[in-house]
Length: 239
Image 1 (cartoon, helix red, strand yellow):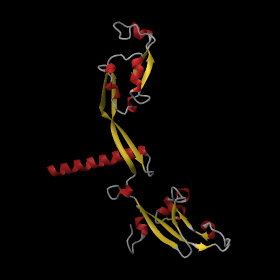
Image 2 (cartoon, helix red, strand yellow):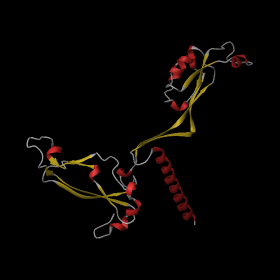
Image 3 (cartoon, helix red, strand yellow):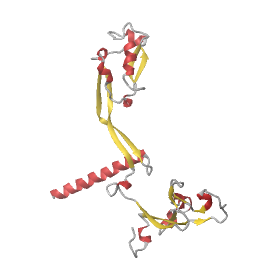
Image 4 (tube, one colour):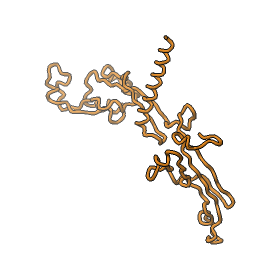
């Protein structure tokens, strides 16, 4: 950011300047008995939309017209004023990273988990299939009808069960890994639960500056740069 005596044009690549100049005055046209401050005074409430973008240097061309910088949520209340009070400020918005200060972090919460693995080792049929599906969140296990082809195959476990319902894994990603089915004796030896060790599921909640999917891609880029920097440092140490 420009210091005292420095030209703001020199920082047009990393600093956005916003100004706010507002003064609260009495509305001479308001009724003497008026109790609503918004009608009784001018500028009684100061909103985010009152911030004015002041471009410097190349910003005059980069952020002109529809591309001009403005507030994302213009109706956010900043302050309440009364006659004789005013706000005169200049705010410098800069782009930083979370290690500098938490306010620069674009992520609210981030977590990861491994993809659940559900393997049905022996057929689960009929009423057992219905109970098995209830052990998992909706959409994880699906019931399908046993076909004639499945029942007629040589040494098929479905022989004599044509038309009955069987349990199949539909979407293991929805599983919360409660392992509820292992509590019941009727499912022992019929199912194996685990996690896919090389399949990571990331959950990223954005604060709004970036879309969540973009945050992940950008973080991978930064991680790659850090790895390259570490590799370069190790090479220099060996020379």
